[in-house]
Length: 406
Ligand SMILES: O=C([O-])C(=O)C[C@H](O)[C@@H](O)C(=O)[O-]
Ligand SMILES: [Mg+2]
Image (tube, rainbow, N blue to C red):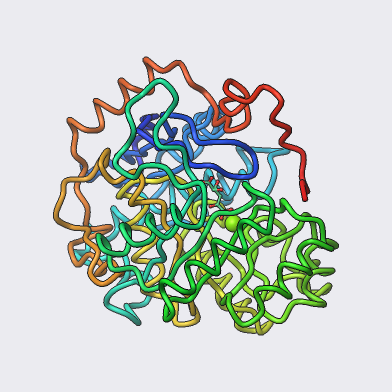
């Protein structure tokens, strides 16, 4: 089962104007699909970031992994590291992750086993995800309103939550904050609490608050949040909030790779690590992360970025295999599902959870026509990087992305 080629297909899919602390999502999100070809004709799939630098790193490792066995993932990781001298840990891990997931897809297809079985078996048959709410404009400027409409105040956020929960059945809620002054976002959380008394709630301002503001928000939302995500920048900022906060602090920003874990643990800056196989070096390394979190008494949840069904399948197999995962995982999928690249059927939400696909490998099939359409959209867009700040500045030229803001 030797790798004959990595075929990387960059794609662009529709994304609503979702607001965050660095700006607003552009009309197209970038991603890539990897088709890993083998000498036996079996093709493995995976999905990951589609920005220029990520694509360049995949191009740089392409020759090194040719001829390697899809079962030799430890050796492939070493080859990827060697092919990317000087690259940051997180970037090497991201390149390897795409290849590892595709190798596991091939392994599963060859053995007739779902990836969750290759990872040691399912501890849950369905993986709970959270409703991931965003402040948003009604539509992209100059375009018709999208199906979700505007959400710029507590009523809009509650409306969005209701719509998403009605459609998907989610049992937990995350609000992307860092958009409006904290008082307004606290009001939105309180409105969510009133409308959904039983749903665990989280807010993630992506480091938009000073430690002092973070401490104040933590105090005001004590007893309301299941965790507070990345209130303030850096290990120092997080540690300062953590000392005063009554709820756990979660992070995908100050802890984002193995090298960043020890300093955060030493300072008591983070209580819940937000894993993401796309950045932590694939599915097996994320299982290793879970073991470390357990050893250090840290909780484990899962982060996402704009993504499609191949990633959702990989996230679901992984989450199903980790006993220590104690929270509903993040997913952007409802925002982007209409443009998916997988053939419908294998992935569905039942009561806010995705039943683990049972077919061989990831259990999803590529929709070739959709892939070709999204690749065309990528090529025609001329886009190379995600630029939430630049897009925001087209409409608000004085927008300043500097953080912390409040
Ligand atoms: O938890 C997070 O930090 C994210 O989900 C990062 C994403 O980039 C999010 O901020 C977004 O989609 O705007
Ligand atoms: Mg986050």
